Image 1 (cartoon, rainbow, N blue to C red):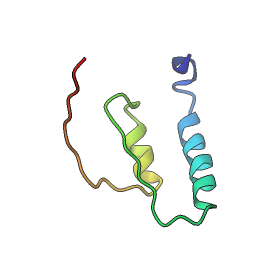
Image 2 (cartoon, helix red, strand yellow):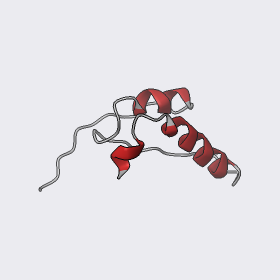
Image 3 (cartoon, helix red, strand yellow):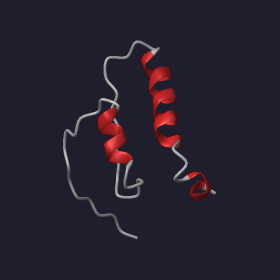
Image 4 (cartoon, helix red, strand yellow):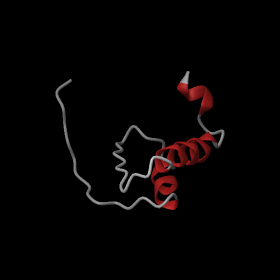
Length: 63
């Protein structure tokens, strides 16, 4: 079902809506963890929203 919504430009809208709700709580910091399952355009959207890359690392988990 998620694939139905991909490519419709909803990501930036949903991220903005979520961040507005989060910041209304007067928090000082928000952490966003991402992985290779994200849409290829996701990183650029996160960066435009003001997030910064703090660390990159490869992790593997048993199947």
